[in-house]
Amino acid sequence: MHMSWLQPETPAMYSSQALRLVCRYHIKLRHFLSSLTKNPRVAVAIASHRSIPSPSPQETQVRLEMDLYKVGMRVEVVGHSEGFWNSYYGAQVLRVDRKKLRVRYEELVDEDYGEYTVEDVDLKHIRPHPPESFDINYRLTVRDDVEVRDRDGWWRGEVVFDDLDDELMVYFSYMAGDDEEEFGTFPYDDVRIHQEVKQVGKGFEWSYVKVAGPK
Image (cartoon, rainbow, N blue to C red; front, side, top):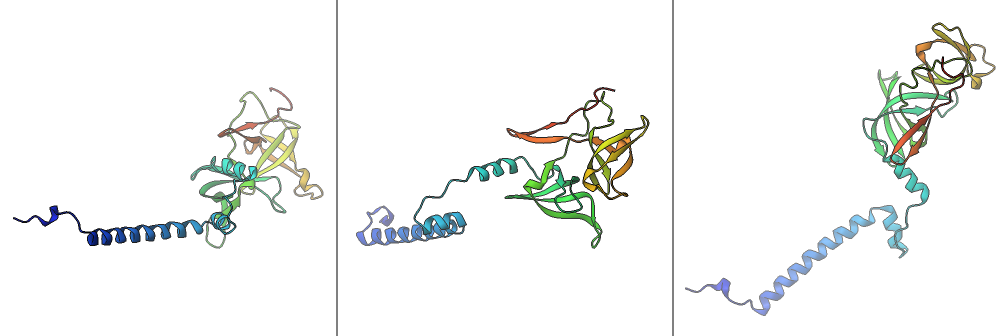
C-alpha cells in the first residue's frame, strides 16, 4: 500500500503552500491597516509620520467624568440658556457618547409627540441627581440658599420669609424687575436646600451651607 500523504513534500508543493500563506496574511494586514486609518487621530499620525499624540489633561479629565455616568442613571440638566438660568431638570441617561449624554427628561414633555423630551446634552451641563435628604434636624428658613419645585424643574433662590407653618417665601435674584416672578410662596415640601457637587476620585461629593442652624 502506498501512503502518499506520508511522503516528503516536493519543493514545488512547498512553494505553492508558502505563497498561499503569504497572500493570506497580506490580505489580513491590509484589512487591519484600513481599520486603523478610519480613526481620525491615527490617520493624522500616520500621514504626518508621528506617533499618536497623548490625550491632553482636559481630555483625560472629561474621560474620567464620563466614566462616572452610566446608562439608566438619574441626573439633572442644568439650565444654560436665557430664561432657564439657575434651574435644574431631572432626567435619565439613555446613552453616553464622548462629551455628551443622551437623556430623557422626567417631566419635560415634547408637545409635538406627547412624550418625555429626549436631548443630547454637553457634559458640562449635567450633574448627578442630588441626595433627596439631608440633616433631618434642620429646618429651611430665612436666608437659606434653596431650590424650588416649579415649572417642571427646580429653580434656585433664597428664602426671605418663613411663616413657621407650611410655606416659605423665596426671592429669585436673577428675575429681579419682574414683579410676577421675582418672589414666590411655595409649600415647604416643594423646597429643598441647594447643594454643590464635586468629583472626588471615582465618585461625587455633595455639600451645602446651613445658614440658620438647627431648629
